[in-house]
Image (cartoon, rainbow, N blue to C red; front, side, top):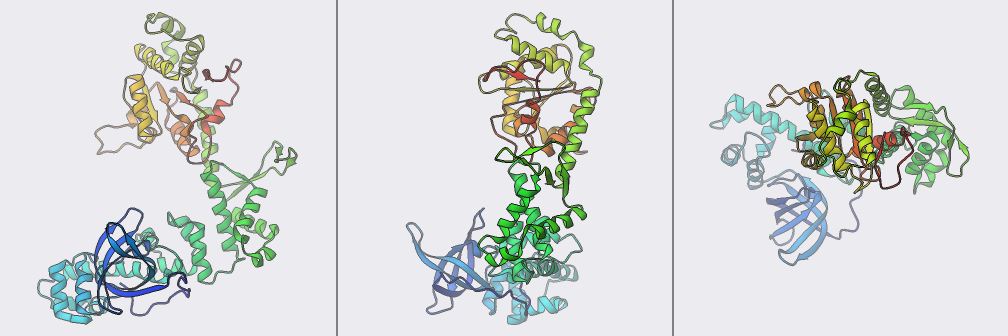
Length: 522
């Protein structure tokens, strides 16, 4: 619900949408997962007619609202003539019919069709003003008590806040769905979302999933944030680091970070390019470092650039990456230095030799060694391409460990991979997230108990482990438990920062590397 008077961001409406229609929403037909909305609208311009309108710009509108739409007419082979909306200006319902539709839509919790009619019958065209400014007058309506008035008032204020954000951002190509996300992000805090939008819009990058720098920058420039302000430059630097993390990087050389940020801010903007030199961006980066939002380090080893020359070794990274990498290294050291419980079940070579010929059929010398390595080393890596024998090796490993009385826990990054691992080894497997999840008192099965008793944890498709998940995994594995990471370094990489499996596979093995296409272990 829009306040009677509200500040608008000055913005030209699209010029490539020649047709303009106005009307009142009758009902919604469809809201897609991609936010595209289809509705029926009764026009109020020209001849009154019922039309179908569709587009993402309609997301969030409700029956009874008055709309001013810009768009183009199209013809669907099945549904006929439709108005494809490029721009939508929303207005509060004005007449009794529209108000009745609006309140009956279910938008305001506590008001259904019957109560909506009773309220409109009592207050007529003043209904929305009464709910907004004099909600206590709702007690004049039969069947409404003080408790229901409180609920209606709270729901109205919530929707009013969302609508205020929508109207403020109207024309900035910020979707109504994103306006809802902005409100929701601060709903349970003491922060006023409109104050943040108006005065510190770049906070949205950090606080609201899906906003990102591009949308926040549109808002910031519209409300008057200078293009060369530290706030904007620092938001752009953080954005480029975050983008690098999405590409799998754990850090960026400072010179590359500066170059990417400068390109982001000056592309198609020669005026900004003239005043935005590297020194200005370095100053902004230093500000982020002082605030603890970025860590910079100088690598102890020389770094080569693309030409083979020694380049500046200064790097920048986000604190969470630094935490994940250092803690992962600490937990790897911890596991490597802990006393092995599997050692008590030795000698493993004799146990492997004691298996029947059928059980060991087809095992190569390398597969024998890979199994022994997993059983005798606190952390080991099994890698190889399709058809190299990882499946048979794993099956035999789990079988011999079970036969010796060891407790084996199986996991994989995804549910599908966990299911394949379960079929391979003949015992239950779960996702890594489920394995390391803190125990839930209401859970029928305490997954934490698996790690408390496990002697060997096997993780398949380990190439999909990013830094954060690998840190959580190694932190959850107790002292004395072995960890085996299985995967193919040439297959799916992790979604987040880090190539944990590839980096660990690159550690020189205790013997010469096996030929390409065969099994390797470490």
